[in-house]
Each structure stands twice: as structure tokens, then as C-alpha cells.
Length: 294
Image 1: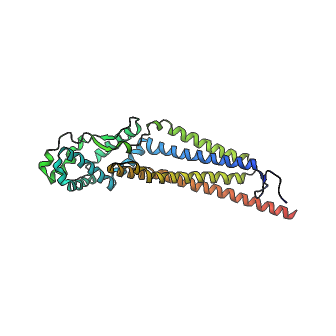
Image 2: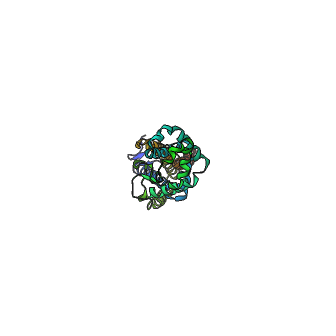
Image 3: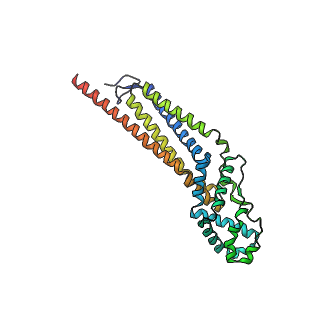
């Protein structure tokens, strides 16, 4: 015999359509808030916080492909000053990579990542231009080993304005620095409040727990997909080949914590949903037993 109009069968105790739709809407809101909280938290901890940024940026610049890109950029600057250096470009780049890998360039790397963080956090925009004058001798030395005469022609200020990243490759999040922490806290608090209130006030708490778990799981999946999509799409927005390498490596390193956070949300959401599902099945079993005994 069909149930009353406006009710949905197949759920323990039946629930009205209005209650069901409201629960789904709350679940969707929890999912959105969780996604926003996760992304904002990542921006704050991975990019805005200087220590974490410096660690990740240093890792990026220590990658082989990044060092090759830096060597190419240095040779570009040298060739611009002394065009004849184009004749020894390949050997010069290989020699510079050896220097970069030896640790002699580490002080410059430290200064470079600090300057990079300040540029990203500013709202000035434009390309990231670095002053490598302090390590000019380190950069010129491998070139001098190949061609001393040509190396002597490189001006003293040849590396004073080295374009490390073109404008389109520089993320400008200075405006986000002030609100990333607040957004992550408010969004997370709102999601937790809705989840707890939804479960506690529901007449079908186990079912509400399933919906909360699924909401968190979906949010985690969204975070992972967003992270992976960005890793594929970010480099395509950069025309300069050298900047593209640095952007690709940078996104791979920086987004690692975002992807991990999304994965943890998926696991947590699955556990909560599974616990709720167990509760639903127990409720169904009890209802079946009660109906049979009566």
C-alpha cells in the first residue's frame, strides 16, 4: 500500500520530502564550506606563511629541471651582453648547472626565495626580477673556464636585473593574505556547526551522519580534482618556456599539501559516512525485528 503523500519510503521511519530536501541542502552547504575552508587554509599555510613558502620554493629551485631553466636564464642575460657567448651556450649552461648543484649558489637561492615571497605577497604585479649581482663571479666563473676572453666582456651589472618569472607566471595573492586565515576559520567553523547541529537535531541521526560524511567526502574529492586540474592547466597559461618550467615545478611542490589535505577529507568523510551507514542498517534491522515480533 503506498505511503502518505509527501513522504519517502525506503528510509528508516520514513521522512517527509521537505525534511529530506532540507537535509540534502545542508549537506551541500557543508560540502561547499569544507571545500572553501580547505583551499583557504592551504593558501594561508603553504603560500602566505613565509617559512613554509621558503621551504617549498627552495625545493623547487633545487630540482634538476629548475636548475637547467635558471642556467638557461643566466646564459640569456650573458648573451644579451656579449652575443658571441651564444657559440658556447650549451657548454655554459651545463657548467652553470654544475655550479648550482654544488651549493655555491645556495646563499643566492635563499635571497631569491625571500625576494620571491615578497613579490608574490605584494600587489604590485609585474614580472619577478632578481638582482644576482652578488653572485656574478660565481655565475661567470664556469663561462670563464670555457672562454676567458668572452667572460671578461660581460659587464659588471649584467645580472642586476634578471627576469626570473614573466608577469603571467607570477601569482598575485597579496590581497588574499589578509583574509585567507579568517576565511578558513569561519568556513571550517560554519561547516562543523552545521554538521553537528544537523546530526543532533535530526530525528534520523544515522542518516544525517551519512549525509555529513558524504558531504565531506565530496568536498575532499573537489579539492583533489581542483589541485590536479591546476597542476595541468597552470603551465599552459605561461608563454615563456623558462617560466613555464618553474611554474610547473612550483605548482607540483606547492599543491602537494593541498592534494594531501583533500585526500584526508575523503578518508574522513568515508569513515563518517560508513559509521552512519552502520547506524542506518542497525535501525533497519531493529525495525524489521520489531515488526516481525509484533
